[in-house]
Image 1: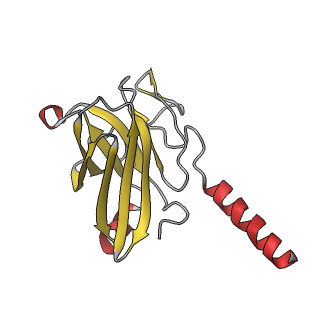
Image 2: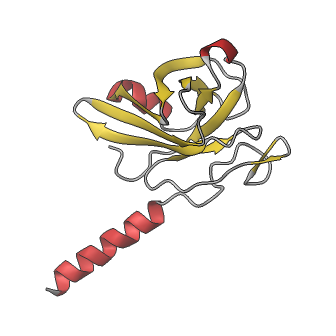
Length: 158
């Protein structure tokens, strides 16, 4: 019985430690700010924080989960305009760097998106140097509404 309780306590500690602290996925400068604009902050258990950019009010989580032969990258966004169809991509660099697109993601619709990424491809992204961008619309790709830097793979993603 003591072994079961200790295992449960250890598991809870690992999950708690893996939770991304508020502001940890900032896009430069002090946590919670981007280019002088306050960002809407959120918490993502086992994922990357999508910070609202430029007063868009669109924030959320990019959560990778192992599924079959790859990673299912789910995006969940709050504050998206009703009926919006927003392109999303993985880019090289970090939030704000305008890096090139390296992997297209399924558009965000009704605040949700999910894209299957092969393990071999995901392994190139999850060590840093890449980020997820959500764009305002296909007609206004340069306008970024939300961004998350991809860092070391969160707990449970593989």
